[in-house]
Image (cartoon, rainbow, N blue to C red; front, top):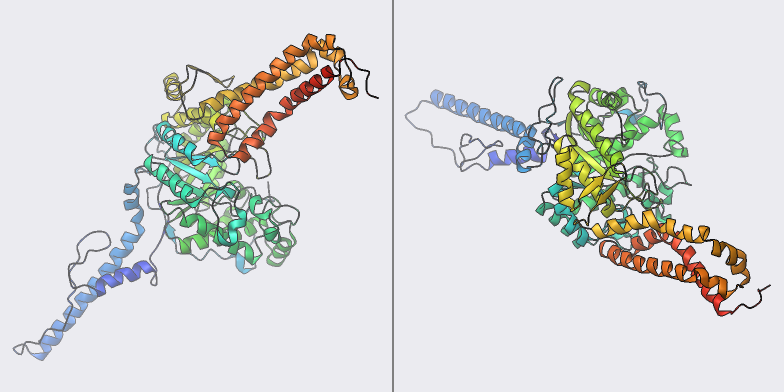
Length: 621
């Protein structure tokens, strides 16, 4: 939430030119920049001098009129400046969901002056956040349901849902208390032209992107696109076309910030995404976990030449990205993950000037933490010039790269901890809280396996959203979540929900629960604990293709029934998943979560049928 970051009027800005044109074009009543009527500026031909008036008096009158005209022009310019600076106050009223109240490198100490030109403050129009700042002693409202933004993060670098599923989910998110969506498209965006190589084979179409925004608008959800601009760019740098832009040639994680083509590419990517999100007032530039920064040869040379460090080098690149956004997309507010800022000195942050143009999103996903653990970061950001802050929690995707089932209690505690930070913020730092991102990571990075699927994470998301909306966890709130999702009960420590479920994807939720809890167990039990299999159908028997049908038939019907049941179950699961996901996601999830166990049973049944047909022949040598 919060206010729009705007620049002050400069003599050559388009805004001041437009105000000047109002004065020049006056021949009718003109309204000033804040909506108050101003004096009509006389226009047209000069009036004829009255012959009855002496020349001295006429000269005095002309001088008086000229001075009056100058005063009017100065007044208009002043009003224009005031309107420009306080434009956000009017913008806020247009968005009901916007607040009306308003170790990667070494020592964190102040760094010395950078000798190179890169140390200069970002040359951009000065910015001002116009909503009142919280002062120490003020209390964060316990009910934040109508004041700050709550963005649900959709990580589309894996298991991107079909738009038809989002059409079902968006109303639920709005009902539960979300008022925005953070869309991390990665390769699901319909890049075109030179960037088309970045698209997934199942990328959304331009019509899909428009439909997503229409659905979000219908349900009062603001769409905030996220474009990674420094680290986590594997989906870009994996392509041979862009390998020369890697910080370290062997690793596709991070950009080399010194190659001119890096910024040029980012400008193209940002432009295509922003042009398709003209309703959006925010953009998230990522910029977290820039692994191996400073290890490339160009970076080492830069630091040696400019007596800099990785912190100043990082800020230089962020300044360039923000400079492009501020110049090309006036009024678009920027967010960035904060982890790379944590060990950069206050002096370097102040010198960079980025605080005027971006808001840090402080992320922390542990279940239990105290506000005092976050306090030093917040105090540092306030001292560095930031006026507002966002937080980031997690409802799934942070408890292991291959986690398939979200631990409810873990994520609930994470949100309860963040509520304590919100309450303590006025005494921790003079920062205005603007919103929170409920992250739902689908992969740890572009190359990792899938984490919990979105339908499986919805109960956790519902619990966490309602905890934020209500300022805490209560039995009454829990009952509301159960009623909304169509469950009868919820066991937090066991991370289970009882009942049929009526939310979008409930069938997938229950079927994944069966896979997660019973598939592996039942198959391994049959293969490893059935004495008849161990005694008369061992790997040796199967390798040499021999066995006694009398002994095989003692366990055969049980194994065949188990195989038949699981194959039928998986067919149904696949059918349900295909209504939500594209084929690549369905195949990947099956390969990772079903086939490692079911394939063992399939192989056993195949060998069983083959050896039964041999009718107790001698073993194959």
